[in-house]
Length: 187
Ligand code: GAR
Image (cartoon, rainbow, N blue to C red):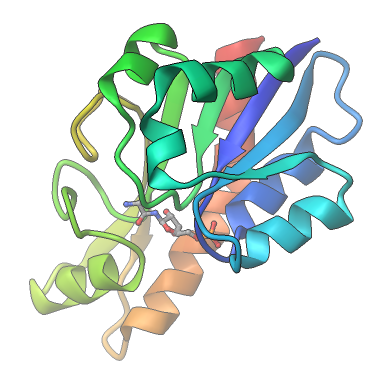
């Protein structure tokens, strides 16, 4: 059984899509949810699904010894970031080569980088007058949103689109494709 961890800071709808998808899977199990925000809805959601969750401070997260011990305690071999706001430290990237993936709510390399998170991304896409957006699943390196792209899916932007409606469209795509992309990488 391959044990994966999901790192998330916010509402956790992608984390939940991943947890649900692998609930009765023969080879893959979500064994841990890591969050840097004790108030994030994702923590409650993990609890409801009986998944162990860990709330980590920035110091803990960046401390190789303590974070490694946490991941080892659940035999984690793969990490999926799902709306996780903290930069992944270099030691973690090196420890999990090509085994950390992220989802981004736009078509990278456009509209990525530090500060480009959630609603801000969609606002930037609309302000740029784009006719399409979408989602990108990519490997994680020690820079925000810069690792090799694994998969992209597009949505069309309607004439009356706003950041909320675009976020919903993109989230739907994310929920459908992120779990399957993880499965493809691990099988
Ligand atoms: C998702 O749209 C994800 O792509 C985005 O945050 C949202 C989290 O929603 N991630 C980024 O913007 C990363 N730069 P969720 O908590 O409901 O899964």
